[in-house]
Image (cartoon, rainbow, N blue to C red; front, side, top):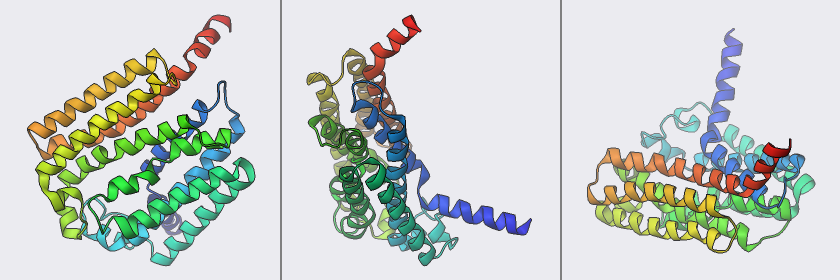
Length: 302
């Protein structure tokens, strides 16, 4: 019984090392990119293999991030329960695990998907796990803006997995998440600013204060609204997407404007959590718009 409990605890520690909730969102947006990349229904086997490869690589990047951020994680209340911060795993266990995840993901993508997707996935993994964590995060309050390029890659990776090409439409999906990342993350940084300050991380609320950060969240949300309307203007999506995007953007702007005018940690927390749902729903609306007529025809003829 004791051995079973120990094994279960170890599995949980390795699982937590991969930041599973973050990886699930990454894989979800990548899968949406796969479906959007083709006019009909994509090959199911390719979806499974590409999702697995991208997910393993993202998990490796998350593990690298925790290895490098181990000391800061032990200071911040939000991250004190992470496996390396608590001593549930040691550094070498985490390094070996991250390496195995990386190698497995790259092999799957190169052998069964395509080399372009493997290269882009590797670059985004290193961008987040190393470049952002080692160089950008401790050096500049613009860390999340510059480093956001790595986190914005998944839908483009899904697109290239199906097309083996970088196209304007795939890049537009990338741009949406790139514009979404600053207001999303700075909302978190606002109500966690004291923890970031204690850990010595120069997040924007720490270096420039609450008022400046609120203004930046507002301005970046305006940019996000404009970017999310571009797919409709280029006829990538139709009216269903437009209605959904307008509604989701209106709710996001409601939170952000309210936060700008009358700040509270509770409202900042709500804005952060809504931003996660916003991205999920926005990509879900893309899928509905993309397959609406196919689903309608299936309802009538099958």
